[in-house]
Length: 325
Image (tube, rainbow, N blue to C red; front, top):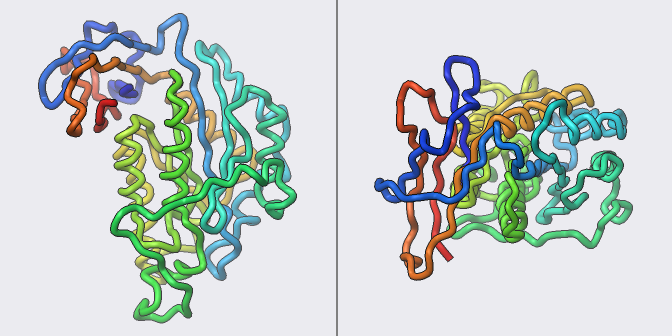
């Protein structure tokens, strides 16, 4: 599956037909059997996968209670408005995840139930034993060649850690990779989007690009939301943190999503973010195919969407790597 959007000026192009689209496999056209367009009558469900970094407070640059202000404000009306957007032609589902320490926790399975979403969001900062699904922990692993960053006292030379507070954080990057693996294992026909709320810094040497490559392999766009960023992190006081957060934001363009920044997120801001992601997904095309028996499964293929006419607009997304199974 390859998700993509087409933009002309500031507007989405939603009226393209299957004949307007070319699928390239390793640079050569190949046929495709699935074409899901914004104007399709029976669209695939859209599944939002919000992931919240709930690393404990790190003075003076990270405070999850201050960042996630929506937790005490969010209610079923907010959930329902996101799950049931006006004039939507596709079902919208939401699952909720949080990362804490070296674990990924699933707070809600994919659902259209507003109350289930509300319960999950309002539980994000509760002690783990008090959360709805304490048995839903997903163990994480370091990508090849990546290492832990040990906790240590900050120095101007960054002797003990490449980032301020790095060793005291969790496995944020690995949590995103674990989430991508978890949702892709379902193998159902769903248009998935990862929305990641984080500073983009973890307690390992794993980098945002490691997440981006995994997302490209799975055809899942990422919407990075750089949190607790404005007014706290700048290039003069914390230059490496500042650089890493810009790397984190680059995941949007890399995977066909879109990046944003927020010093804190109240209920209104969270609705704005999630509604924007849903709007993008509703304007999205999806092209897919089932590899034939006997196709080359021994190597990785490069897949890319092109338009038959360049004047039709500019493509966002539409690229992925794939090993056929």
